[in-house]
Image (cartoon, rainbow, N blue to C red):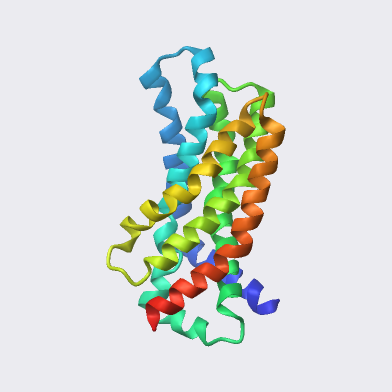
Length: 217
């Protein structure tokens, strides 16, 4: 457990030492949502109607921005080889990196979501459903992202390919995430989101470990 926590701490320390990556993700998330009122006009009823889809698309795209640094820096400097032969299983190491990835990408977006709620004219009940849906659904996006990053870790410019690989996997998350913000479908969609995240977080470390081992052998 100590090694597992140490990897999470290492990932957080490296990201914070790297500077403004987290700020870039948050600004991208906010700007993606903020330009919508300029495109569709100031109709508050229309903005509130399309807000769930906009917020989930903005969150998905923002999380993609941080995907390339999940495994690639460790692959390039040889750290990934050392982690493969460490006492902690590679799947557990990847699970720790997925947790750190969620803390560094999804959590800042959730904290910034009130800004988009105001810009998109969401009411208070829709806002809380949005926060809950992001909390339940973004772990699945982080887990799917880990699979895509692992498959492309040894491929030159693989960061451009990974989003294409994980987009089909992420479609159910976007559908249920959007539905969870709707007042009529919220309960069932939230349950599906939770189930998707549990399944993805449980299986993705093993799939990513297999992909990394195959790529480096």
